[in-house]
Length: 255
Image (cartoon, rainbow, N blue to C red; front, side, top):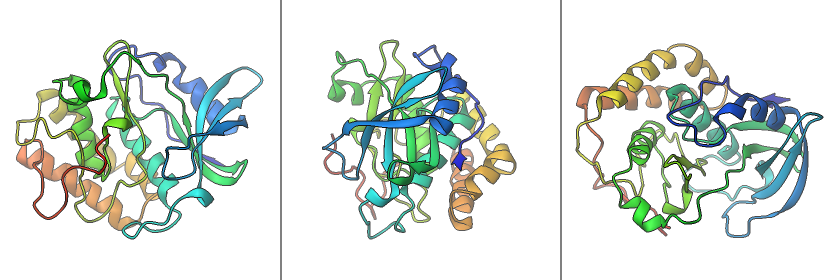
């Protein structure tokens, strides 16, 4: 059994894989996964793999549920679903922030998240990127506010040669309590762009339809309702959120 979300991409710009999203999702969902190695710096078991079908192959990341490290503030065994839920929101916005991601029941170590591997532009300095006025990062800041990302580190940003930036590691999103921790506070308190407001309006409608149904299969009812509420608050304020005094605003380490 697999779980994926409909393709609603590409987002802005060509950024490498947009034309291959359908093919990649199919391969990630049904292809044979062959393990190549482990990413040793990851806090949870993260395996670098290749997924094969008769017609295509893609590098990917596989995170088995059994390799998830227990957290005090998130239910055990739920990080894979949260990663897939983040992709569902990303796909619904059309911003292509999260690489294609699916839930597999039949991975080499059982149930887990499988995500397309993205080769980054190694010439981009991550500190300079975070400090930049990148439109891609500004969209990501809005996305993180929607999904309540508790861990947007600089190392979770994947810059592409054309200026697009992907984001990864969304296992600690969608908490019911405010937990936004991010290195992307550059626009805190600024007015949302017109494009962001339009996207949020469309996202809000989708939360009452297809997207809401997708999230309901991956998250608790309370978590889905709080996602709706966060979108409503962003639209009501018309501004990027500001750091909370009740929660550390930046993850540690930041990169």
